[in-house]
Figure 1 (cartoon, rainbow, N blue to C red):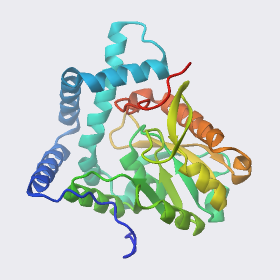
Figure 2 (tube, rainbow, N blue to C red):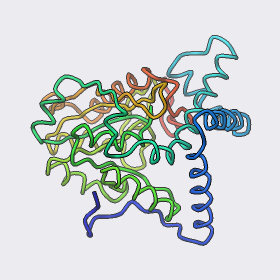
Figure 3 (cartoon, helix red, strand yellow):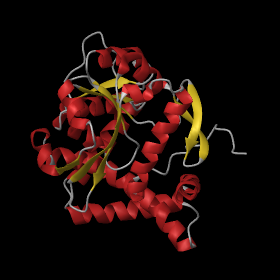
Figure 4 (tube, rainbow, N blue to C red):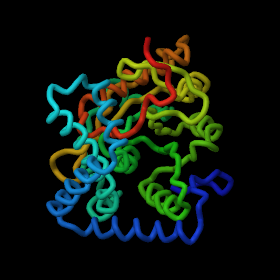
Length: 311
């Protein structure tokens, strides 16, 4: 799937010699990791995770506080440290598996690597050709999900993405995702285009568990006020499409995934709800998906920065 010539492209702006050097270094590191046996790559993930927890104290503090908010206080210091280490493990596992995915899982054979759990109303929504907004948090393997969603019938499928500032790296990621059957809509420039895609029956994926960059509303996220993206509430009501919640979890078997669809919310259920109420609904559904596999969530993000303190 390629974008139309007049569509905005999800490309970064840094196109300097230094940017190209960074790009080549990243490709070399990830390409080398892709060639490693699974056990060796797992050992490398463990080493990098322990180094990240120790060397990046600020990110580790963010993860520790975010986990305490969502999961409750850790019963011991050892459990707290292990939680933070899990966050770093997942971050590096995803990073190193990105290139290996291309070697181990082909777009044409992705179905052989999936166990799919549908939700009520999913089959009818896919058969109706109406499209909708797919919402997933940063849990599991969202890069594998890019290949998984079109393969199970969410077609055409597009995803809103904020590209890396590094232009050659962003171009590489864009080409990789398009090979997987996913059209990429740049977050800052493509919201009007999303409305057009939805009106044409497309599915559009959004990851809504991080701080929004534009207009926002406040709604609870794990019991604490957080700024939230209001776009899905506006689009779902304007275009009259459902919200579909999903996550693509890693399993113990390397490069095999559990694709879960947890709930489909019809346009009729959204009618009459305020943007704040829709965001609260979205957050509650994302919380359930995260809590199903908390060790596979990106806790390293400072989710509550800029939000009002409770009480």
